[in-house]
Image (cartoon, rainbow, N blue to C red; front, side):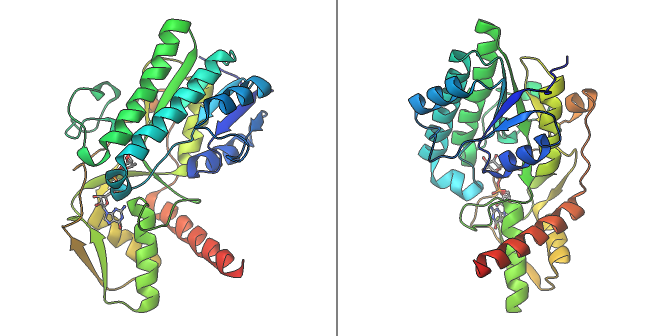
Length: 316
Ligand code: GFB
């Protein structure tokens, strides 16, 4: 299968988010026109605004990277927001795309769609084979609905809509707010602040034993463009790095990169979440794609981005 991006108009919905911004950077090297619109002009939660925009702009393809996202505590604390906002964004964008005759759409899910105790590494066909992880089931249900929307429009209307399931992502543009962030940016910030303060300890949430797979967002964007150009099919495709590590080992690695030399302390009162969610990358590999950014290099680059961004914030 081949979908040429040359001369095409591609709308990146959610271009201000970490993934959307990486996609815009990556698509700059394709000979296509990238369409973006801010929330002030088009609120993706307002159906008529989304319909009007898509009808007016007539993109040839849409990448739906807009979503309400957050780490384990945010997911657990705001279940209604994670379920409702994501469902509304998805139904609005899929509905507007179909109504305007847009025939190509790439939907982004998340590795948390899989059952909490799925056999590892998790292959695509594990979807809906068991109960979800309770801390993020609201978000997972919304993302499963998105996969099913893509599949349903394909089945009923012959639309070429596809879905990708990225693993835990990190990189430039990440959220470093400790209340809502994912673990990797949270630990970069905690390690940095502990180093500056000369603190003897750094506290991480949970037991430190859960295993997580991480992928740099630039690798993710590259994989998504690859899928956009080369994949058509009803089944979603996992997008991961192929290896995982424990949260405690991740903390040690981040402490080393940042230069924090104190002790790492666990806080078992905070949730661990799913014990492991390493995805199988076989399908994407068979489609001819492999990741490039190693975890240590990716963390170092993200730490540089964090320092630069903070410096800019202070100057601004
Ligand atoms: O990245 P994270 O928030 O989300 O947490 P999930 C991963 C693991 O890191 C959990 C631990 O076991 C956390 O308890 N952790 C340790 C920390 N210290 C910290 C910290 O300071 N901050 C955070 N945030 N975690 C999310 C889902 O699950 O993954 C979403 O809730 C989505 O729906 C996303 O799927 C990719 O990996 O557990």
